[in-house]
Length: 317
Image (spheres, rainbow, N blue to C red):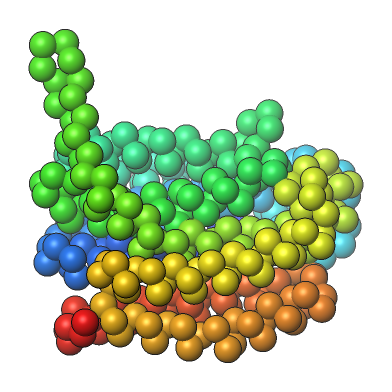
């Protein structure tokens, strides 16, 4: 398989959606706890990227196998297996290879940290596979946006922070006299969740925009996503409201002291994001306007990450 066809199979351009939450968690560990472990950082990055690529490859393979509509932009141009005439055996071998690399690096990371990383890693693996594979893949249900947003936006951010601060008492699991004892620092976990909401919402809206664009094709291919259940107008309204909540949350994190005052500068991205929302409202197609959701995600979270990073170097507020 050539590099170009491999990158298309795993949709390398979409990996930003997992790398940004990963960087966010890492930067937050440095900002709030003054901790950063470079080896754990690299191990998680390797495992994360390979899991993400594997999940995307599985999704494209399942779409290829289950497609009822075998023509049009999504099938002929978007699916790498059709576009580059890839052999099924090659695709399956690629998926297995990605799984092995992700598993090995993830297991080494567990050995360097604790059981929490293993548990969350295994759950994420299972959800990642179930997202695209099985009798009823999550991506083909109305809960796709929730799962993708929560796991890619929050769980990745949480693990990315946790691998640096696993010994700080955020979560501890112990076994004593046949009892499993679980201790959770609820305040810090809530803080991490609020911190991650820009990525949670950003990822969810990418998924939502994708499904809005694919309503007609999804009906033919029996993908019963959220927009099919609630309709295009309600889906567009949710899409817009989620962005407004994202900006409100940024203000809340500053007021609670989770983020530095300089993070308020992220609000300036609303000008571009609001313009993109209007563009998407006017027309919803994968070819013409879907990219606005990806642009919004990249813009908001790049500035968000940058300002948090600046807050580390120049404490403000």
